Length: 272
Image (cartoon, rainbow, N blue to C red; front, side, top):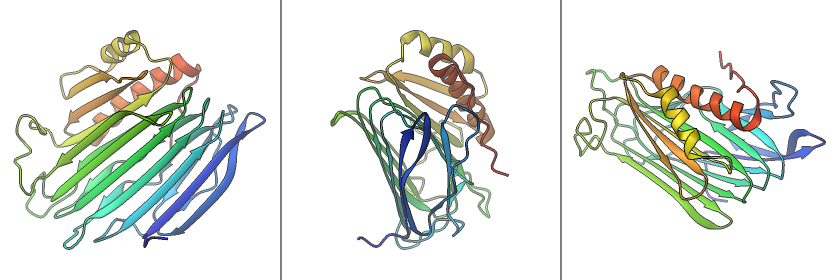
């Protein structure tokens, strides 16, 4: 096995209408709490923990998640992911997700906080079967720096690859390099400090749903963009000046999707 700072493998399956763990394995600086069931739907919620408190120089993390047919899972983190100064080697996290037909995964990690001189690369690879449903969001937040600079981190790279029945159907690549670019400018952050992305893949997606989402979340304190994918699904991108604003937008999107697709309300993920 490669030299990983933390490893987490979680396989879940449906047993008579309740999602339970089929296999759980973790080592190093990643752990997972026992599942929580917020309601009687049978959907499990797992919290990922990093006892180390933050990502440091050269840290490498590997997460592998598998949902069997009809399994329903919410996956989140216990707190924000903090990336500190990485003078020699960037921190790296790789997540591979396997989704069987009929399953539903909500992967909603807490915000990523990039501190001064931090370098971080994150790669998510999602391998879905037709009929699976996937909802994912991430939020980038600049951390405190001594001189008050909003973009004191060095470099950030987000890669999302989504495969449907082994065919690449979505590729999302964000790279921000404040050390070499003026990312306040048009085409980058355009005067905003926080970046949010949501990716949803589900067969019930329709242009009407996107219209309803846009009407619900459009506002003047931030910029949003919605785009349909080549398969039934869509992305939402948000530029704003606070984590809370992006969280409110994504919570509203999540609520509308949960009501329209599953006739449920999303669970409130209490962290503290």
